[in-house]
Amino acid sequence: MSERTYKVPRWLDVPEKILVFTIDEFVAFLATAGIGIVFWEIWISMPAAALVVMALRKFKGGENSAKLIHWLYWIMPDTVMRWKAIPPSHERVLAG
Image (cartoon, rainbow, N blue to C red; front, top):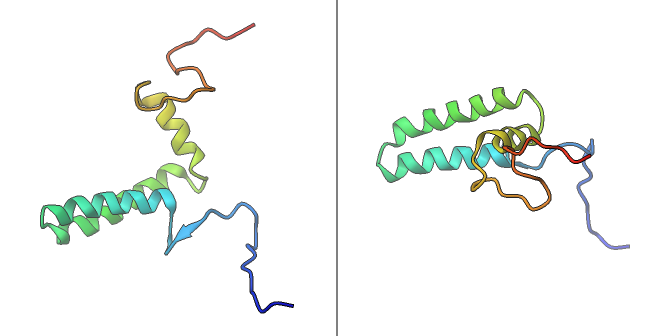
């Protein structure tokens, strides 16, 4: 037997985390903090990044990132959210 150890998740639907953030929260935190760091306003950007993450968690409501993707599909223009298998959100005619 080998000496490898494997991390088995307790539940199958647990999202992957980076530190204490899910991946989408981590990207939002980095983007907000990065903008503040670029403009040399780190003392303003860190609380702002924390507020952005808290707002994102509140928006998701304890659900996964699919709710955020669903919201972006209906709000963003077709040029931003272009998927091959799904028709654009402005087309209301259903097949059948």
